[in-house]
Length: 182
Image (spheres, rainbow, N blue to C red):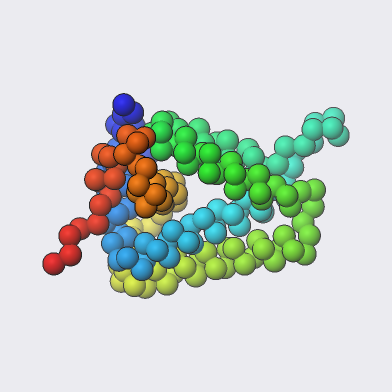
């Protein structure tokens, strides 16, 4: 069984469960959650497309894009937070990175428009979602929530597919369960 006692570093030190609970508390409205599940991946894709435009070449033979470097760093962070959830999130991130790497070797008109569309639509989804929520999170929470949001979305995806319990995510699923409706 995977431990969830690993901490997320921010202004205060939180366990993964506490960070997910805080994120869930600030994202209770169903429309806000739906828009975040759309907006977060779009913003990630936008950043991956942008980072795929920047490459390091070794001996003019091997090219490594910053998108892959960023994906590896994110994967390490996620796996250290929670082995199973981090591995699944990293796998999905690597699929997105491979798709976004098709923008190499240089930006094209299509990849530029796709980058812009992903970022604009993603930010609009988040903004409209927060309008429905009618609450504002603390600014220092934004960095932490940037790392927690993809994990939250992956947990919700696994719950919707009814496979979260197969990979031992029952504790995390219970932590983010929406409050009962009155």
